[in-house]
Image 1 (cartoon, rainbow, N blue to C red):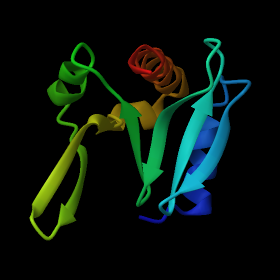
Image 2 (image 1 turned 45 degrees about the vertical axis):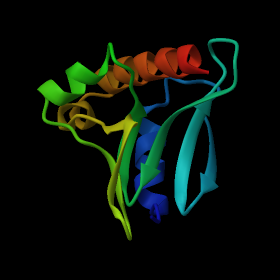
Image 3 (image 1 turned 90 degrees about the horizontal axis):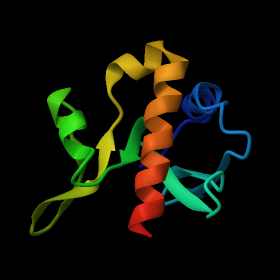
Image 4 (image 1 turned 180 degrees about the horizontal axis):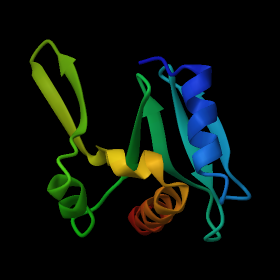
Length: 114
């Protein structure tokens, strides 16, 4: 589940509106964190050079409507879907302001879910 340095830097550039953006690695991926809402919270992750945002029951339909998918991984017993994490919509990658907007919503959701 590696994340390339180039892709992570690209995402950092898109999320440059977060003045306190921090990253840390785990399971070969990279977590994106912020405490701009007063609580240090992970709101996004890059796994296999795919960006995922935290979602909840209120925001998940926005991702589904755009055809985005939950994070999935395979186990011996079958495929597991992690419905807390959804791929970022493609149109966000062409618009840093829109990316920032969705990221801020993901941060709000992640703080609420803590």
